[in-house]
Image 1 (tube, rainbow, N blue to C red):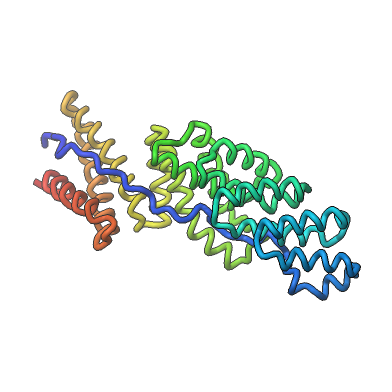
Image 2 (image 1 turned 135 degrees about the horizontal axis):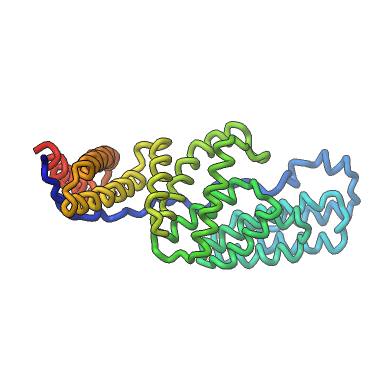
Length: 327
């Protein structure tokens, strides 16, 4: 009977997820362009004074100037059928801002001016995104909870929350509240994507691209959250799902190397104590699994300068494990 030792006790450094900007999908808040929708404005037959007010909104050179012009417009024409278009136009200018502090400030001011639920929903995703990027987690969770009450199937918002939670989890700076909310968001987002629930604001082509890109990453995000919540079994299940959709993603594969290796180490130690044949067989099967994930991770990181150190470490440990397993 083969004796099982523990080859090269090691823990591979978990690399940082390759994070895209938190704005996981940019959707225009407005449903029109004030300049390009002249025919509809004529159909509505606005007065000359209202038309001039609309032109001031459209011509405003900055987001704060546009918000001011929009506010002035509402003081006179709050009942106008063009109000939603003005709200969308102003919201778009704020969404486009790069400065997070300015975006938060103007988004908050926007909500006090354009205060109808349909109008505040135009800016909420951008405000929540800005809060998350600014590290204002409590504010983001508070706003997202209110938003999702009205829009429970907003897969884009759910994806934002899930990805933010995974980001903070790997930095070991996520609060339990964020981890819980992010995991729920990931689960709901996965459910919607698996059911192919396309948002109305996306075309079929946009949805297919978005779903194909983000479904494996939602599984990955939930796996990362579970990993850092010390729920290793759930983490492994989620990450294996992610690997099924995207078999060449280095962070997912590296986490699976670590998780399967931890399972092997436990079985090897248990066999050293118990010397039971069934434990030995489980340990040998598990080391084969570790070798498989290692080989995949080596292939996925090969030639990538960002993962050179990780690839070198993986190769060395793969040699040790393979040599041990096959004498």
